[in-house]
Length: 161
Image (cartoon, rainbow, N blue to C red):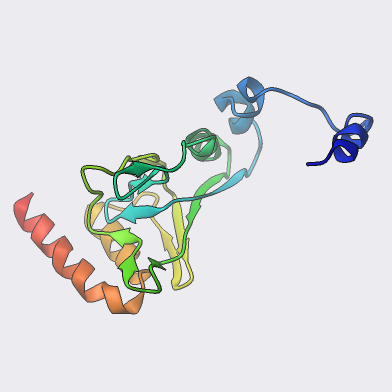
């Protein structure tokens, strides 16, 4: 923001400035009824784990408050933790829904903290789903040209489990 914006915001009676120790605190977020936390990710795997920090092994971001807000929304009465991301990268050549995160990807958000995943191809409501249903829901919102490969990968993963 600009200096005039901060100067005005500092005089607004309806605004309070608080540190992240308060704004991102689990108790603060959980106390907000029906909190909808919308975060993004670089990629998500068929288990529901998402990486929002590394790209091809290079760290490009920290997780910021995404994990805090995901957990806080899940604890909020009627709340939801939502991840929104484009289904592809690289002009459609690369699926951002992966069969599994790679060894150089960081699981910024664990699978248990993803309630809903949204792409331009739909919505996957993951909360309470078992592993197979989660994978099926995520494959359904992947870009159509990547769905068959993801389904084949998932079948191989399940055979190995």
